[in-house]
Image (cartoon, rainbow, N blue to C red; front, side):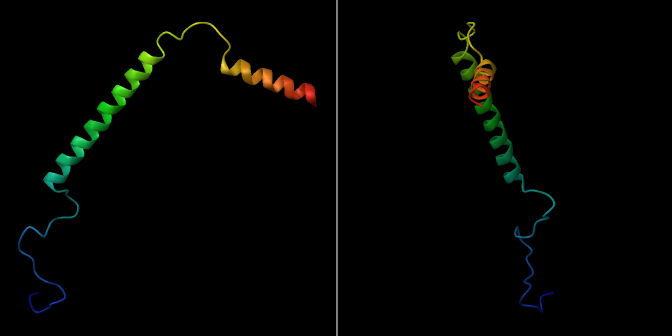
Length: 76
C-alpha cells in the first residue's frame, strides 16, 4: 500500500467508516432536529393563539366557492 503514491495510507483520524457517522456530526443532527421541532411547536401555538377568537359564524370558503360556481354557471 505504501508503494502507491496515488493511494496514501492514512493511519490517523482521516480514515473513517463511511457507514457510521462521526460522533460530533450525530450530535449536531440531534440539535438541528430538536430545534426544528421546537420551532414547529412554537409556530403552531402562535397560529392557535392568533385564530382563537375567530370562531364566529360566517361565510366559509366552501360557500364562497359554491357562490362563484353558481355565478359562473349563470353566465354560461
